[in-house]
Image (tube, rainbow, N blue to C red):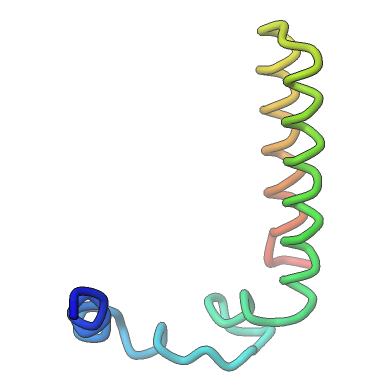
Length: 83
């Protein structure tokens, strides 16, 4: 019952264009459902996983901060909607 109530509230509050989940590469929200975007998202996940393991292997604050900032930059660059 609880999840159905939350879903009902979301349907009431979300805009109509956000309820459509058909992939569309030119739409700013529905591009997240395309296969190319999902592939890039998997790459970002792998990069963050590798970066996190490297941060655990070298726990020096400058390395952790620098690697975190660099990984964030790379993630945003990969997931940017302008090609």
